[in-house]
Length: 388
Image (tube, rainbow, N blue to C red):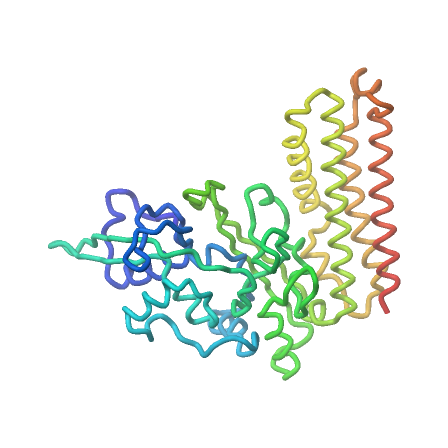
């Protein structure tokens, strides 16, 4: 992906390295390929395939060692419609190409993780240097691809179904724990169960792991450049949170933390709106959205650098703790972070900001969003009190 070798040496590769590179390339290829595989012998245009893993929002459990990591993510239950495991190497090559050109969504994990995004032909020259010829296969649909066990899901209004919750350049500052409600073992109107959570629930019920075990949920996302004709990766995001298993498996605690996360996201939204409206007062309408996004990003950074991080806060929670008090402790930190942002935005207002426009000035805007944050916190605490 991001080569560790200089230009002079990156074409020098051993055959075992080449084999691993091919597997990685099929999984993470972009859409910049110019050549297309012919459909029915015709030069038909189609949406070029990006690698399967490139189009997911991968989420997996990291264990103490490689063996434990593999066992915690080897999901042996799941989608009842999944087909028997069949990687591409079990196909006759010509049969596989014909199968791939039918653009059928993989219905088993082995096929998904070995699916070809390109047709490749490799020649080795007299010095053993590989010469690569490639052509793109058609794009595969990821909508409701529930044989995929290691991605988070969200409802995609445009596509009318669940799709992987991909990360974008615009939201790279947002912490991983904002996806808390997607780390679920249940299907809802807004998301689909994360496959590995169903597996963790089963092995907990079998007594193979303790309810107090920390679950190292890890995400690694490649962020593309937003260019529809290339989608080249421009950065890699690595995040991890480590809730105890009971936080994920106990419905009351899972919902409590979910309400806390949702309320915190709304507070961040209030910081965005406050910043945007004050920027408009200053006559910076053209830049107001960009300024507001920077403010929101600063909110997340300041929150992470506050008295206690979200992960450390999770670690301190005990199963017997009062859930309302736990929420109040977090909201105290959240409110202080917002107040710091608010004070920075609203300090030393100019005459233009004081005068305002259309009965709106910096004081009315400040008061409005301060009240909005207070109502968000009160409403969340009210909902948490209702949880039996």
